[in-house]
Image (tube, rainbow, N blue to C red; front, top):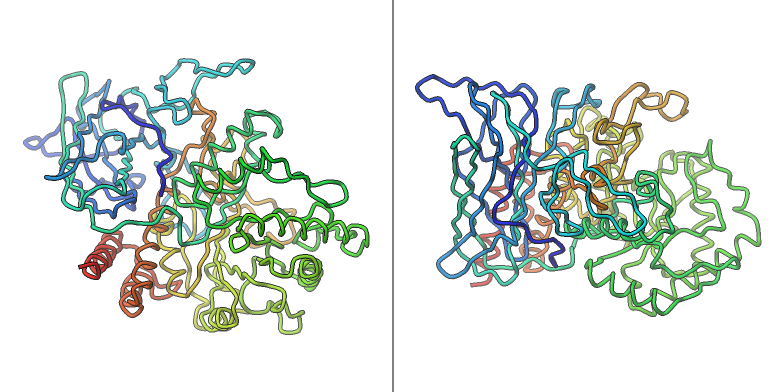
Length: 608
């Protein structure tokens, strides 16, 4: 994957957060400054001891990111300040991975006063947003309490959250996240380096880093499809107009951040053809070239064609107002729009990448009929345009209308997955994606309900294991599912913003479809990036959870390489060790890494 990241300095000054962790240190082994290495899926849980290793051992292919964490802890009698981290190059006998390919973050902590439904971890402080030490937009250092540079006409801002040093009181710790990018040109072999942490009172500690680079390369363009939402909330959070240049630049920073994580970013509306009142398009040559450049720069695998603005496109039938579904003028405008938009992508060779996201969770006969009505309009205008509906591969009720002729991409919830009906759809030429929302297990109308009713899929909340974010691509490959959907990464719902309250909830009690979730809190629901405006720059702050989604998408490339080599049975045996079913997946991060290593070794053996 093409790198879209700024360089970092050799020496990074760290700001250490305020999380209380109590260590049981014997007097004779007392360490005033302690370092503990964790893999990317391990978490320091509230009120729990830190367990990890005294060295870092990571492995990656060429053109792949690999991450690890280092927990910096003060002894129970020690106050640390002006903490610094020095990261050496990673060197093998034949090659060097330099500091510009290593990005370091301090993990800020967010407070969860309430548990999410079915949470596997307790309330408390969680490391989640990853604060950069270098402004990823400008390349400048981000200093605490100092106003940042701003374009002419914009107000200067003082960052509220900063990675730079504060202090570390006795018994406290801070988590450091490290991303190592292995260039496509890196030579295979074992690389060595060191992380050294020092404080102003002449205390220091270090741990060795070993990176094994495998002798194969991941592709620039992802093999696994993704749709993680759009960025309209930027305008409200920043207090700017969606037509402003600042919005366009900030939106682009968010798009490129997703691309760095092997996630398909949305196409900014400012790059799409203009839609005229009659449904036709106006194609501006300059904008058109910008879009072509964007598709190439972010390695776009696929993209959503925007819905028609002339016909209602809503789900939740109690709130839908589909009066224009039968309006002849609205229908004709929509047909013209879809016809010209599809021709636009065909002319650029993008027809295999384009799809229409028709409807979200149709849960009534009325919704099912709306899917059919919209599909018929599209089929008359652009019959080859693929249509996606967020719906499982079996009917909600047996007597409801048949959606099968009108859907090309099905998208069931993780807990709604059914192997038999998925196989039927795939055999008939359809695609199947998956998604998660809230905490939804198998529904009563699941074909195997009695078998799976007491099981649970991975849920995406901060107080769930980080494995839950890496494992969906393994589950998807187990079932032949090729895409992953999530409604948004920018779920900035609560007053005060996600830094103060990263929670969706309590769920409104006045919604007819929310009975099961009234007065519930969904920590991190729809939230995978934080607004960088609070950290001093116009862009996103990635979460630890987004990083683990990236790791899972990279795992999928291993499956693809092996499948392309005909190693289907081997891939199946690997999957069965990690995620045999959507409810039967390991929580053991070391097991995932061990199986990934087996796959890498198999790939290398095939290339000998």
